Length: 112
Image (tube, rainbow, N blue to C red; front, side, top):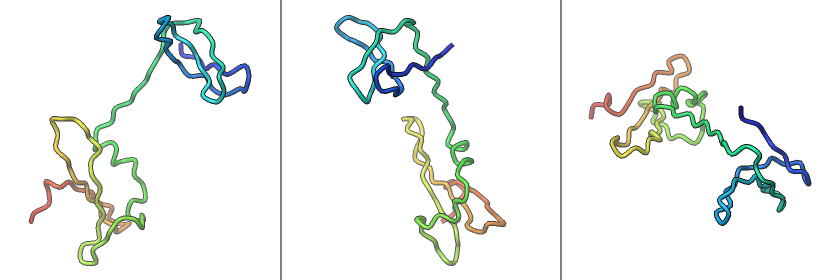
């Protein structure tokens, strides 16, 4: 079970840190110089990986974002995928600015 540890001096969160000289796991405060030896040598890291499709689902009110350029003939906004994998190419995602529509499509669907 993962636990949170707090600095005895300033009550900020302690972060895992490796002492490379002694090859020990420490918990260190990023606010002051306080460090303490870890009682448990196990560190948990939970990294959630989302597909580019899943990442686009969390973008709400995209059509109201004033930073996106708009074309009066085809009111839509676009953004790039955040995938950094070597086997995938950059992909553009589009979203309709009409709040009733909200249609989303990919660059492969765009016909020039």
